[in-house]
Each structure stands twice: as structure tokens, then as C-alpha cells.
Image (tube, rainbow, N blue to C red; front, side, top):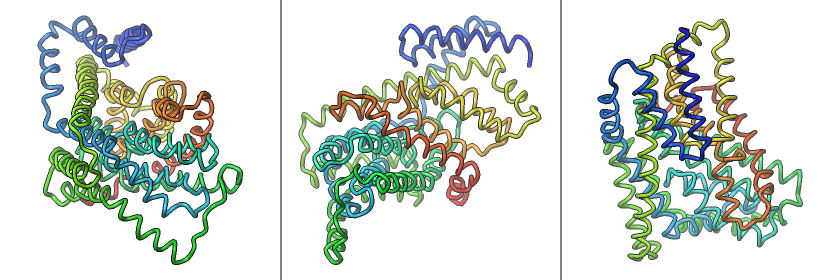
Length: 439
């Protein structure tokens, strides 16, 4: 690697960390670093490049899917959908070891398949679940941990806002990324459930006495649960069928999902009011505006790095190292774990993609769809690892607890489960690549 490339990296990283250290929002720190790199490290006048990035950064048909799915998630939060979903799943899972703690994982998985947002999933399910489980005598720590971990499934199970961002920044098919997240999402949710079952069998004091299956009564409860769950299943089906039936692009499927969610809000849940509708629109605009600024900043930084030839130089250097590519992948995982303790998931995705994507895909030859799925799991971990884990603070806030360590203790075992899942998907990449390769 040329000496000037090393100097460029040191300067860019130093400026980025320096701006972030002042408390500036990461999107603006990225943007400031990008402007400096383009204007002062680039060769000649880079103003035209910056103009192009500002316009083309958000001029994308693909990105229209993002505000649509955000809008749908806000509708689900405010409609009362989560109350009905939790009630239905509770009837099915109550008698199993761990009882209603499994309800948190399954309800989060189903809700995540609608909203595509970890924040929406955590707030919607946690707001219903935490008071109910506390009242019934479930241990607070594992209750909060299951909500934290279950909420992260919102960025893996399709549709996923994180995958929309990844696909937009790397040029990969969002439809293939969505379908690639199905099996890993189910496997990860199953691993969460297995951990909860074993933990509660080992510590029976964490849960109250389980309800019995009750023979015919249980069958009746399962049948009646579909009266509570069917609207959510309809919403999931409308998204997946429209995309993979070949009737709509992911962007158009987002519009279909919004229409279905509005119809359910008005005619099934019957909680629609003009005041709530205005609130939903405001929240959608705010969240989407923040993400769009981050996308522009990320693309500006990516352009600066490309013009300075940093990604290709790094890829070439790493691909020529006389070590296994899996060892390099393990080192990259450690970097993500360390950064995930300090940077929020979406920000970490935006910062890291210009550097690590060329290394993993171009330099080491990993499948870009597989990398998108495994990267999403790494970013999930950043949501529940202190000190910056966003889901930790959301769960702590809605729980009303005064002890933050209670939430952290309950969440850390799920981080270990995620690492085990990452090992599994690395050993058997077909779990993530089978469906997209056969679309």
C-alpha cells in the first residue's frame, strides 16, 4: 500500500473521530469529513463531484421504499395492532417452558415482518408485553432482555429498512436481500426461543407456574388466536406475495403495504383519528429526513474514498495476505463488535460500507447477499450492546425501570446467541443464499 494512502486514512479517520467527539450528529460528522476529503485531499476541484452526490444521493426510485415502510410501521404502532398480536400469540405459547417470554420473541418476529424497524417493533411489543409480564411475576431481567433481542429482528426479517439502505449503498437487489433474510430470521428467532426455554428450566423462579396444555381447550385457544393474528398475516402476505409473485417491486410493495395497513387501521382496529394520522405523518417525515441526510453523507464519503483509491488499495492488500479469508472475516467481526458498542447500527452501516464491502466482496470473494445478511446480524448486536445500544435505552425507557443494568444483564446472553448464529451462517452460507439464488 502506498504511503500516501495510509496518510489519507489517518487524516480522514482523525477528522471523523474529532468531529464526532464534539457531540455532532454522526450524519453531519460524515458530511463534514466528506467535504474535507473531496475539497482538500482530492486532486483538483471536486465541487462538481459534491454537487453530483448531493443530487444523486437521494434521487433514487429504490429509496422510495424506505419512507413507505417507515410510514407503515408508524401506522402499526398507533393502530393497536401490537395489542391484538400479543394477545393472539400468548394463547399459543403460554404453556411452553418460558411461557409468555416466548411470546415476546414470536410477536416481535411477526411484527418485524410488517414494520421493518427495530425501534417500531421494540416500542410496539414492549409497551404491551412488559406491564403484562411484570404483573404475572416474570423476572424483570429476562423479560427486558427478550424484548431487546426480539426487537432487533426488525432489521433482519423482511421488509428491513437496514437492508434497503445496504442495497441502496452497494447496488444489490433489495428483493434478494429481503428474501435472504427469511431463513436466518427464523433460525435466529428459534435460537432465542431455545435459549429462553433452557434458561427458564434452569431457573424456574424466573417464571410463574406454566398453564397446562389442556387438550381440546388448547386446540380451541390456538384456533381462536388466528382471529387476533390474521390482520398481521394479511399484511405480511401482501408484501411478500406482491414482490415474489412478480407483481410489484419492493418500492411498489411498500405502497401496497401502506394501503393495507390504512384499511386495517380504519376498519379492523377502528382507532383511526385525524390527530393520530397527523402524528404518524410527522414521525415518518422526521425519521425519513434523518436517514436521507445520512445517506447523502455516506455517499459523499464513499465517493471521496473511491477518488482517493482507498477501498481498492485496501482490498488488494488484504486479498494478498497469506491467511485464511475466514480469519480476516473474524477480525472484521471483532471490529464491528467494538464499533457497535459505540455507534448506532444505521450509522455504523453507513460509515463502514465504503470500506468493508470492497474488502469482503471484491477482495475476499464473499457473496454480497450473504454479507448483507451477516452484516445485518452484526448491526443487530450493536442495538443491544452498551453503552450506545439503542434498543437498550428504548426498552429501559418504556419499562419504567430505574436500574439500567437490569436491562443490560438480560440482553447480554442474547448477544452470545447472535454470535453463535453468525458462526452458523458463516459455516453454512446456504441458509442465507438458498432462497435468493433460486428466485
